[in-house]
Image 1: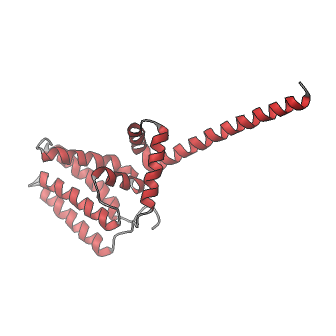
Image 2: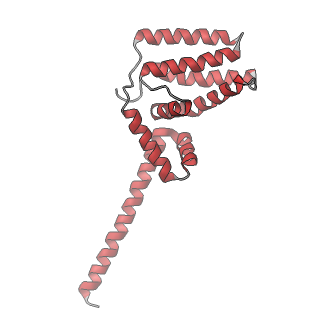
Image 3: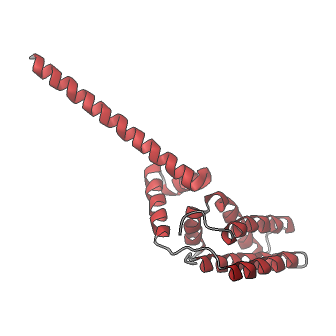
Length: 183
């Protein structure tokens, strides 16, 4: 084998190795970016539902693209005050009627989401959309919703309903504050 052929083979091996290293680096960077954007909990949930990392990451990217097309905006001061007043009344009603208060809290969150510009469809789509801008509270929101569903059949304790209200309050406070991403 000639020296030129050996040099060409070595150069080709180096180029292929560099390409593999670059692809692994870019894949790792993408994964880290999505974990940062969506939080470890939501990322892990997407991987579990998607069956593998590649499908999960494609789904998370689609989710982010979908939300980018929305016209999410901060609440007008009057709307913010109205929603905060409603939240205060719901919390007060919790003492005498926890189940009804949890139902009202869930409905109020839907109203706030709608006023902010998020489509309010079925729960899973709503949760997926909200997870793009509010990833750190998604586990709480999902937990609260699960409790709210259990309470419709009378299977949630008062303590669970109290926990649901705490979870809902976390998301409520994020939604009535200024948005995390530029509008």
